[in-house]
Amino acid sequence: MAKTIIIKNFPEDLHRKAKAKAALEGITLKALIIRLLETYLKEFKP
Image 1 (cartoon, rainbow, N blue to C red):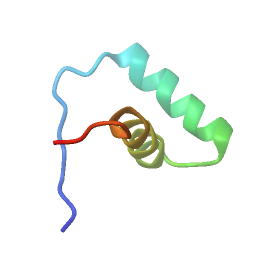
Image 2: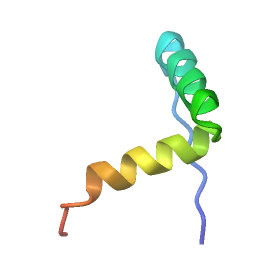
Image 3: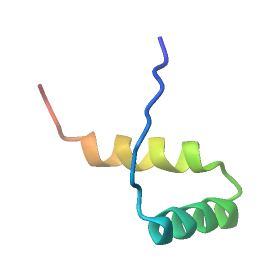
């Protein structure tokens, strides 16, 4: 089941850069964040 994540006080500059990067890649900000988390957690074994 999908979850909703709310990030308070997220740096405006970081949000703007991430949104621009996602747009350049033709994906949503959500898709960019999911891709980055999957990459970051690739080697993680709980």
